[in-house]
Length: 618
Image (cartoon, rainbow, N blue to C red; front, side, top):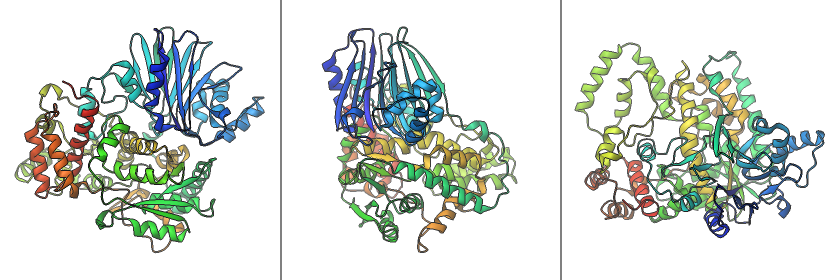
């Protein structure tokens, strides 16, 4: 787990400048820093290492393969590297280290681009081939590890974070597309960022750069839709089949992800997902280290008693972090590490917990991915309910009635979102559960209408099964662009590696290609299959009705006090160049009077702090 920076330039690269830029992401790998610069000073590959496997200097990067002369920089972990190594040894390859980095180099030599199909893990990597004069780079299936790039006429930049590219390329213009995606969806979509021309390689994609021409060829190697489009087969199997298979696959994933040459911990929120990970891991470790965040003064957000139940049952070394008194100035730290704004206030407890875990461990396992794979969000129940009752009222009549009723109802009334959906055609619905600033609201939010633009996400109905379509959309967008970004930046800011066993490719394929929707969502139930497994292996007193991760009380904090005053100052600052102050103050006033638009206010707060660091000039 590390951070890398690669430059390909038609002009001579300044080494000192490049190293200073690499220093900007030293938090991703504080154990060692090394670089490669070719004789022509046209290729720079810099690396900051967080040592997890094979802690010796021989496993440092950039790593050079003496036979092929290829050079690799790699961020992530290949969980099946031992199996791949064994196969390659049988093909007469020899190894000098026990690292997964060397396995990647040899695997590329044997399979070329086909190696991606053989890898199980989270990764983004760059391989430079000086003989063919090209660069191959790729990103893992779900998007656990980041990869940013910038492509212009003279240079090509690739990096684990935006900061080095931002510094060296001179690109500092706000992306209009990124801005609109952020305020509507809570994140920038797929291949764009908040800085113009700096892009992301999409999850499950690979790319080849011809260094002579700087021509870039991007291709997709991971495609779940092919089977999701088709109806499920053999769904009449007994429930025990699905429970037993999930237990087996989760056991395999956890066992592989526990492998490390450094201490490993567990993120334990007290919910079903993280509790399943702890229960499974306890089969392989006698005494695990578990960590949770507590909010003693806000019982609604305090999951400590549920985490304590799991910790006690499985006899873990349990550590609790009190997060009651979090100052709003923490946003400055988060902006520094996130590089671009995103709307997920749970980044705060995730960051604080990562900081605490790092005092004890270098690696932690978490439960991310289960909600998207197995139907854990409440909007899935809403879609199912609406689909059933819509059958009885024709669309034109339904749409007309809903529009009339919405005009009479208060904007913040509970259930308004459900009513809006009732008036739409669900089979043509573009899923959007962020509920932040739609096109009309952004017209009020932005000071300049030139910033306003309609957004298009890769949101589409891909199956006649509404639950399959909705969960896949969340896997494809919300998981990769929110959840995994939040965890990567928060954990790597603290030099901590977080692994997600639920995102093992076999579990992902099982969830989308085998598990029927009635074992995900049914009536008012959701995440049914994981709960069935939980009833088998978790303590009997465990509460299955809760849906709680590492939440943060933004609604309460923005009503009054330090967080309210902090945001008010930011809104009315002379440095607020982009947002309409009157409209923002109205929203803050509504919150103080009892509205629950805390995440929308968090979006404004994070954006304004981010602008001070990145695009504070107009």
